[in-house]
Length: 524
Ligand code: ACM
Image (tube, rainbow, N blue to C red; front, top):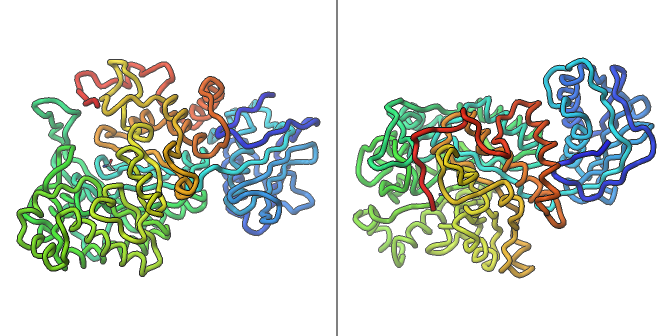
């Protein structure tokens, strides 16, 4: 039986015997550190097969999971051996065991991704040996739940789908002009007022069209704790983003003293606006308190402070902003933004965390501890790496999953530049212009799922898959990537997504019910 694995493992050798047939008597064992993978395998394979997969011992278990940092494996790496005696997963660390368990599931028929047995599936793991490890340590996806709120159940499911693809970072974009999406105990108005807007812009047309329908939602702190724990059990770090000092209209609506011009509504249009945060001591104090609650909720070392698309018009006309520039001896409003980000960098660093920001944080000088997320092309990443900072590559042209997937006129609400599955797959993560030393600062890459035009979970599936599958192989697998070799494997992989019920975009284009007739997009 040919095995189709995504992401492609480093080494795969087919074995001789019959392999292992799973039965109701198959037991699974785990050494310390592998318990979460045991629990995950029992739950997932148990649901699909109807078998109990009772916990076993090293002696009676046919599937054995173990952690061994001295097995000659790389971080997050694993070895999976299937022979007539059973299946053995050895991970360099607990994450490695988990990825081995994910691969083990992929060795089974696609029905292994269903929630109940169909009754006639042969559950055979073929004899083979796989040795594997990821190329990059930051393999991420950003989900914007600010523009259109995505409910908790969808975020949990999204995490499962990231894990299936061996991705390990979920970056949650939690605040923007159009909504504040995380409960902050100290400032309840952020969600009481800031999580709701009166209506939403639909597509991009002139004049603008609005749906006339209120939209909103937010995650409670218990929801966040649940999401973080669910992700952690799947070796995924949830990186929170509170976007400052631009993209803050929802916060300013809730607490008008944060802004420069008094009360404003939660945004209903998409774009970049003049309403930004003030730079007073009170505003800084407010956000330090917000970030203190954020770091209490999210154990992630990296904390994202946004920093993108902050227009400077209001600061140019603001007495308090101009006073700050003068007092701090700053050259201009760009340096004022840097000053603001530096205050947060110092605050986060003092608490053992590291600041991440969009590449605009380079303008006016980079904060000392900052990691840069390069989105306006590769230049920000290159400049930051050159200055000795770590970077995460997420350039629009290869990483923005809100961008259109074809030039088909039926492509729903097409925005941005063309970004096909093939383009995601074949693009290279490390900029060609980087030296080896600079390239060592590339922690990895992520795709960004902005949701201005993704108003439902069904549409989220359509935009994310199968491009995320292509991305996963790009950041996990080493060696050359040939789309002609990948595509047949992708077609096989889609059976897994079908079994889960993922409503991905068909490779041949949108089906009639995917289209959004009459809703215009915008193009680059
Ligand atoms: C961004 O796309 N504004 C980071």
